[in-house]
Length: 328
Image 1: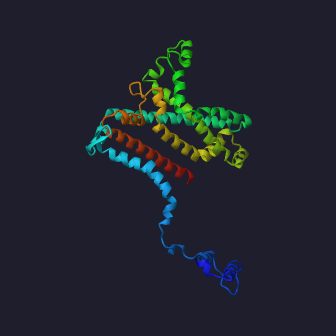
Image 2: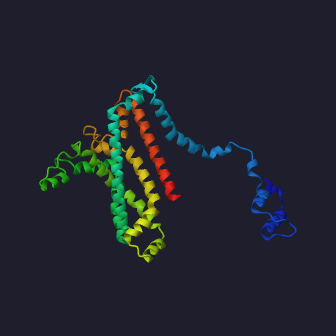
Image 3: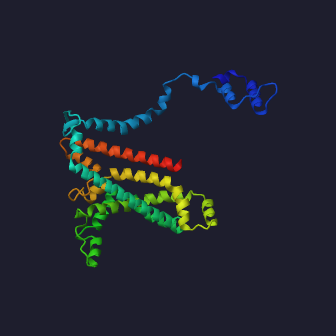
């Protein structure tokens, strides 16, 4: 290295000149000093060794993400007989999927499910965070209790609510009957099944919103609230002009995470409704899952998977754009 070629005495002289302005040695700025000691890094020869450090991460990324995506994209242009390739058919699978009324009905169910679950989780999570943010030790204890549903697996959550909503012996239909009302078929009713699944999904995931919102609130400087109090602002003003703008980026990332999770969630739906009744709770991800294990030609199923991927990418792009506007 160049530093090895410079005597220690000369390096000391250069350093003293740069810091004290020695009259006999011209003063050097920090860039010149760094160049004298380390040399020009831009002229260093390129070596393949740089890739060795990143090779494991790149390999894992390729095997877990890129390769399956490329394979599914390639499969969407093929015709199969179960898992045996028949041949290339171009855009026929895309024409079949996009020309199907069932696909658009499933897309609408997916949008309704994601939007409803996200709205419910965000509202419940914000209410819990605001209520317990200044509750002290009691708030910490209640947060632990509220966080319990989030720790349960989706299969357990689905089984619990499947029992609670059972029209024959479930506690909720029983309480409804005591009021003199007819509970109906609950999850067996095509008009109510999607609403119940949205309610259960929001109940299961709102503790995550509460934790993220609470963490963001606790990082807000207290001086901002004191300034609002000096100006005579109340709780509503504090929330509108201090709390909400400060936690908005955290809420955005939380909403993005939940949106992607809801769009790809299938376990809860399989346990509670299996996609029924009459397809009332069949989402795109659930349709892709069933098509993979049931369909003869899985090419259209690959198209549905590509659609789910594009929706996730679109949601991420929208979030990035909105976050840039908020923070910029």
